[in-house]
Length: 427
Image (cartoon, rainbow, N blue to C red; front, side):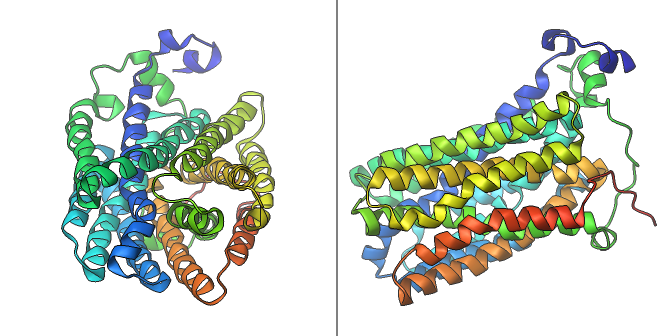
């Protein structure tokens, strides 16, 4: 094992099956975000057909995020118990059922119920993904691997405004939910066939297994939530998620509406601007993870590399405060795209915090706690956005919150984890 660490070896010599796992996670996150973002793309159409107010739409988002918050923490524990293979498959199955249920919804309550089921399943997506990365990658590669699979969310966000309007205009919004749901029926059996723990996988070489296992061994026992809640590193991650996740939710669920109201776009025309925004997000996701991993390869500590990368991302988010005042569409797209890229880069590094400082047995649970707080923040943002748009009628206050959230999150993370060192959790 020490030879793998001491002497650099080419990737082919070590083995590369761990990147097949990342490719599967990437595809799952793309499907996840198609399913998640469809309500935002269809908001102008559904609001008109169903007679929804801004508050009605905010309530649909609110209940999705309420179920997502509860499920996130539950699935954090489930994936720690079942492992990534079966925990992720269970979550994926539930969210696929919720996605198909949208096609049968005929009123506000029907959409709330369908979104709630979707939220239960999607609440297991990131705990399962982060658990899989912790099982398959050493610490020095985790941010990069997380950035790559997290970039799948942007591919889903790019595909949605291209696929959904075309299907909706041709066959109606109900068929849009059915057509996009078919991708899930392809992915799930592939996951069950191709994924195993690396120690049990026939495709993993001894050299690759040694490389994956090159970090110091973790304690083998499970660590309960109540013990984790007494550790400040848990709160560093969770409060960071509470502050930044609502901003991404806002971009995801309200950007089509912003483009429609501020720049006069509709189902036929906002596809390309949304694609441009999420392409920039993809760059940010990979670049943010790559930057901290690169800094660590150059000798930076985990603490310094992660926080420097997050600081750079936070600074790139600041101009979004002025997005609502941009006079031209493409200036607004550039400003918002820069902010979404900053979010994804920041998020790729924040997501690695649990696997950086906690033993593998606790990673899923910590991610679940953080995801729950992030979703609670998203619930608050949904109510705030609905209120602002109903009462004030402009996105400016919403974008100001978005601009400042990342610096505040970094401050909280730094104050609670000044050294970002491995956690020793005592009985």
